Length: 222
Image (cartoon, helix red, strand yellow):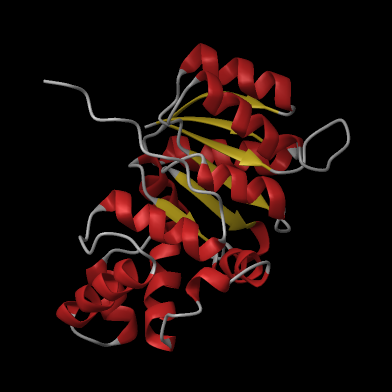
């Protein structure tokens, strides 16, 4: 797996590089500012990018805005955001931009295995959202999920974190069939067709987080 890193903290950046390369991944570029990151993405076309939210010169939201710019030039680029806080507005926009998105809080990534698992999920087109990120984004506007039961919300919150039905069943100590039923109920209550497909899971998560939904591209003709 080819990974481009955007992180201005040299110690953390080189630590991530060393860890990823030790696990057999390739890191063709480590950048410390937004412009260099976008340039590196276009030059190396990585399988996934790891981006810090705060980058020079203002250390506010350059990183996440750079991720959005990179996805304009490289549609579908999987992006895993690392941050010390939740940047609300651009986080929603990045999530709404499509699948292959992760958002983890640095001080809550306690295990290397968890980080690598999240990185692989994002690279494969899935989602990996820290529970605290989900909580804060949900707090900004949860009206679309008012019809969901408490268990529905638990299942949907885990879907937002990137877990599949089997993993959700294990964590909630219920059967996979029960989870499948909840997923179907969630789709119905959110006005989505009741099919357990990846695209509908993403739409359900976007609704849950209050992010704008972009219409799917039309199917190609025969």
